[in-house]
Length: 66
Image (tube, rainbow, N blue to C red; front, side):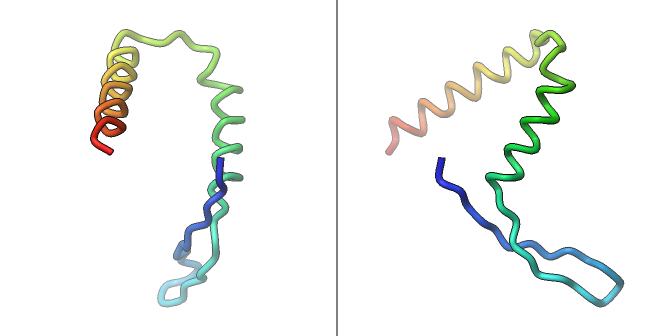
């Protein structure tokens, strides 16, 4: 996976902002760690399965369109 960096505006105080880059690869790894430690141990509901199937279908449609 190719790492990407996005610019973010983070408000420190009213009227002042700090521009800094966010490494999305690091963010993704952090989210995965949190997920694996909490949500990953819970069963997947039927609603989640339905959403995953619809997402997969949309991804297939997008790949075919390209």
